[in-house]
Image (cartoon, helix red, strand yellow):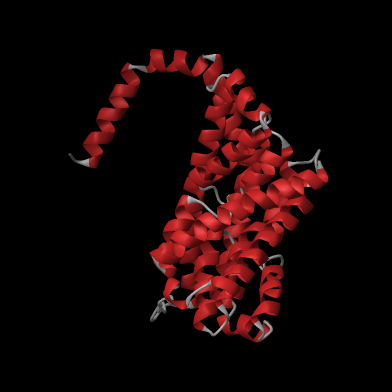
Length: 313
C-alpha cells in the first residue's frame, strides 16, 4: 500500500474517532501518563543532545593514537588510568564501543580498553551533571554513581587481564570512510546518534510513565518494599529499556517508590549492560566475548551498587 494512501486512511480514522480519543486522553490515567512522559523527555533531551555532540567530536576529531600514547604501558596500571579517562572524555555507551575498538587496533591493552568502554558512558561530566539535576535532593547520588561505576570498570579490566583469553576476543575490524570530510563525518554521527539514542529515550520515558500511571501502586510498593527485589527489578529494567546514559537519571528519579540503592543499581547497570550494548559488543568483539562479558558485568554492577548504597544510606 502506498504510504500517502495509508496516511490518509489513518487521518480519516482519527477524525472519525475523535470523540472517543478525546475522552480517552481526558481520563486521569492518560493525564498522569502524559505528565510523566513529557517531564522525563523534556528534562533529559538537552543532556542527550549535548552528550551526542561531544561524543561525535571525540570520535571524529581526536585521533585514536592519542589514547595509546597517554596510557601507561603496564596493563595493570593502564586499567585505572583508562577508567579515570572516562571522567573527562564524554561519550554515550553507543560511542564507547567503537572507541574501545579503535583503542585495541592502536595497540592499547584489551584490559585498559575494557575499562574505558565501561567507564566513559557512566562517569563523564555530562552524565554526572544530568544526575545532579535529576536528584537535587540527593546530591550524594553523583559521587555514588561515580564510585560504583568506576569500581566496576576497573574490576572488569583487571578480571580480563587475569582470566581473559585471546580466543574470546575477536579483533575489531578497521572502519574506513573514504572521501568523507571530518565535518561531514561529525554531522553524520550526530544525526545517527540523536535518532538512535532519542528513540531509546522515548521508549524509556514511555516505560517509566506506564509504571507510574498504569501499574497499581500496591504492586510497585510490594517490589520496592523488598530491598533485594527492588535492586534486581531496576537492574533488569535498565537492561531492557536500554536508555542512553545522558538521560537515564531522569527516568530513575521518576521511580519514586524505589529506594536510592535500587535507583543506583539502575544507573550503574544501564550504561554497562543493556540490549543494544550487547548487540554492539557482539558485532564488534565477537559473540563469545559478549556472552561472557555481559553477565559478569551485570553481576559486578549490582554488587557495586549494593555495596555503595550500604555505605551511603
